[in-house]
Image (cartoon, rainbow, N blue to C red; front, side, top):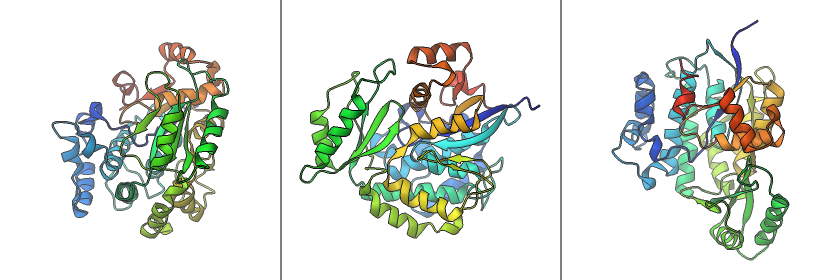
Length: 358
């Protein structure tokens, strides 16, 4: 019997490279100069700032670092380099999933664009995946259609707010029926709901929502209305730029934003392409379902959350609390369990990172 720990790897989405993450590539991945050089060359060819320049800046700039064409590429590079650094003598990766943009990262890590090697530089390795994620991030930045707003469906102890989900459903329908307003569910994110909509609808939503937990409602800066019908044009442009023959069956099972599984032996690459550049761009992304299906189907002994950042950890834990995973029923249950023996390991947290990286 293998002594390796079966591990689910979760890839982060937008909003995870912030001021605290500035220099992430330099701090943790100076041993991968060939990878960064290859990505810098690809960016330079497109007339975009090099990742080494962005990551090595003296100060974090919200306007520069969070814009779609830069943020997507930075997060991809950090997450992919983290993936390459996982100690495979201790952790056996049984499945991959991700949140929103993290789906593209999961595709790249799974080998759906070609073999993943220890260096990460190969004409059939990370560069086609990087082309997709950099290209879609650029399309989103150029159009920046609508925006996103976050609001909780759980209280501060991560227990469901009675009637909270139903009230938000009703409010969404009411605002969406108003003139010039388009408002949709964008992402189910554990105990949080991410709304996507046009500016008129988001303003109405902010006016109607009661402040919660000293943070919400929270508008997301430089985010478009991802995973809503407002992204139809972006999806169409993406399909034109990235043909289906770039994909191949993954070598590691994938769980998408519906909770559907893509296995190495039975994946239809045309269907995978259509999902990636049509459905998940314009339909809600159910990260909660992805996490729940992943643990039920693959029964991982550990979950590893790739960096940068660790903001997705709460949503992962909340998703598991909803199904009573490991007996967790609240935030306190999760914290106490983590203190005894960490089950969720975030590579953006130094004390947990050292347990995973070779």
